[in-house]
Amino acid sequence: MSRIKELKAPSSILPVLEKAGIKLRHFRTAEEFEKVLLKFLWKNNVLHLSTCKDNLPRTTPLEYRLFGFTFFILSEGGKKFINLKANKNVSFSIAEPYNPKKDFWGSKGVQAWGKALVYSKKTNPKRFEEALKKMGVYETLKLLGIKELPKQFNYQIIEITPDEIRYGNVREGVYKTSWFRE
Image 1 (cartoon, rainbow, N blue to C red):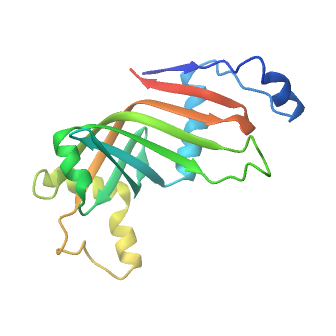
Image 2 (image 1 turned 90 degrees about the vertical axis):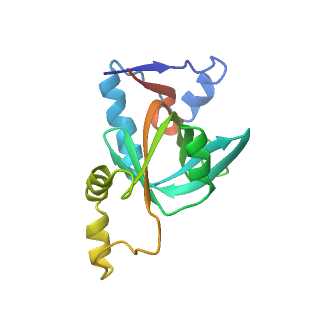
């Protein structure tokens, strides 16, 4: 179950949007918004994950795979894991490049907040293997002529279940709409 909250665009920009040919959408249901949001999420595959420990934030660009509204990331190391061990709360963003000189209203992107679950072949072998299969890792390795993940690395899965995802895409009529997991 989920719900959405749409922020109202300031009345001062409505005439500017109209002049630009932009009509803001209003979603009747969370499911209607989810279709638009998932289209954006499936079109992309890199997020910028923010973690924090001892009041020192860290942001890392990472490739993701999406299942429903759960994000799966395969990674072999880094300070993000030290941070995640201390603090499971994360945020991330996903954005597409745009040129504001060509289309001022062309920016589109997501901000999200939630909790991360980290596991490896050693800590949770069954869940790790299930995640690799969901992510299509073995198919990718096969295309590369590799049979298994290199054993030299301590691969781990970061599984993120967002509590809130905020999406903005004014050009396509979405003005700061938030999705909440319930």
